[in-house]
Image 1 (cartoon, helix red, strand yellow):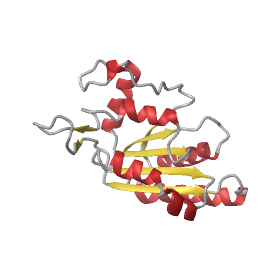
Image 2: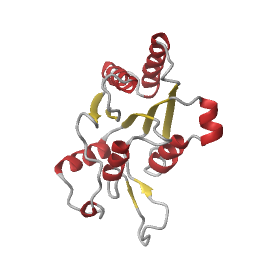
Image 3: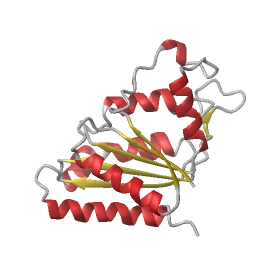
Length: 199
């Protein structure tokens, strides 16, 4: 299977990087082909310009490559921290520029953009790994878990990826090395569950 892994965290020493490396290693060990993108390392430009908005717009080569890849993969994995209940701006920009009409979704004939689009992504499964310094109960009861809504309902559900799984690791700031090791073991288990070894 072809799997796209998208990482959005500026610090190479972050636990997000450890999650992404663990996921990539597990995917490769299971025989999958991995496309890995560290958006900060790649200096991905998150700004969507007016010229790119139209479905038939002429896209920069780098964006065209991302679009072709995301349309072709069998699975998608996103790794990012919870910043103000949202993904980092660089990842939001990736969504704006890559999860676009004609690539990830389309409006049906006669729909000028006011209806519910049809998903186009080939991927059947999407995993999202998040880190946070907010306890789970507070995240759910006070903030309403906005990241779940963003990824499950507003992005992947809309683009036709129905098999969605999200895991939050918290609280990062006070976590021990032993705790982090257990969390990384959980990442490997999730990969083995959703993208098992190719026979």
